[in-house]
Length: 203
Image (cartoon, rainbow, N blue to C red):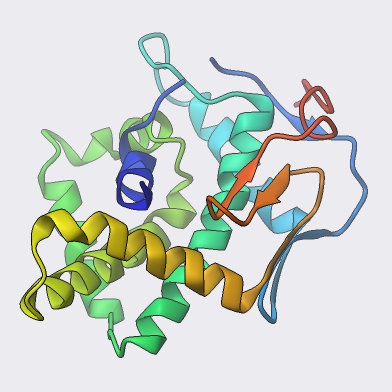
């Protein structure tokens, strides 16, 4: 379910590895008329890998190589999709809303200095924290509006899934094989032979 996937970005864990790609293609993912370059996606990966060197990861289960690359590409896709959903449903999320949520997240930590480790554990580069929080707020507000319209909480997951699937289909999603292959049925990037095994350790 997409709701679980969105929330899992802050908590998921799975073995650590450095990674660079052998692909020279500049295009990463294209969603509608928005194109995210391979360089931008790789930059997120590099930021995560650099952050891992600054914290104790011995007790973390971290996403590695192809999975990490694919996960970062997926996040760029969901960012665009959720922005489009917000536009379609007139859901406004301001910079102040995101800043307030960021402060709330940090306040929940025993010490603000724990934030880097929390982000590493979540496989989330610090530069994507605010965009992630924006996605989360949009999702929450869409759910709230749906329930206020008379729907039950049990209907929410299917509703959100359908919004994501329909919006992805409307926009159209193209994925560089370096990152995997787009599954229109699940609205997600899945592994492909070209991606798996094509990533080698690097610095």
